[in-house]
Structure formats: structure tokens, C-alpha cells
Image (cartoon, rainbow, N blue to C red):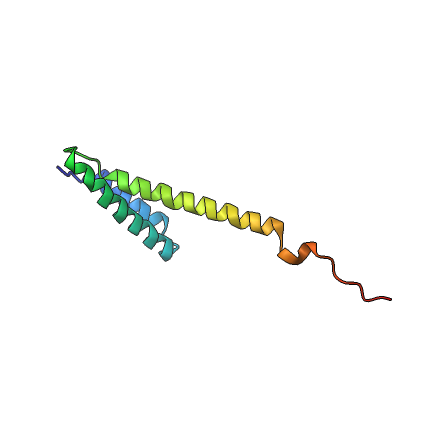
Length: 94
């Protein structure tokens, strides 16, 4: 059986509100929630009751992890600088 309570709706609304500044990120979180919910529904074949907050929480974790990994890769690229920075400029004097 499925029982959607106030807490389930609150967590889903909180996920959408937390990414409201970036519609693309909000859309990605919604699609991940849909994907995780569809996969999570397969558990109904073996279990009778499941919490509805798990797919939302998994989507939140996945989006946050993606942001952290993307941010750390940008910082690494910024620290290394442009690819040509290590090549000295040719001297023109002779």
C-alpha cells in the first residue's frame, strides 16, 4: 500500500524549492526523482509498504553529489591554469 503523508509532500516540495534558482537543476532533480521512484516501485513486488520519501532523498543526494564533483573539477582546472601557461614565450631579441 502507498500512504502519502504531509511529510512526504513536504520533502518533495523542499527539494523543488531548494533548486528554484536554477530551473535546469530543478528539472534534473525532478527527473531523477521520477527515475528513482520508478525503480523504487519495483520493490512493491516483494514488500507491501514503502516510504515515499526515499526517491526524493536519493535525488537530492545525487544532485548535491553532482554539484560537489562538478565544482571540484572546475577548481582543479582553474588551479592548473591555461594549457599554454607552462610554455615560455619566444624571445625576440638578438
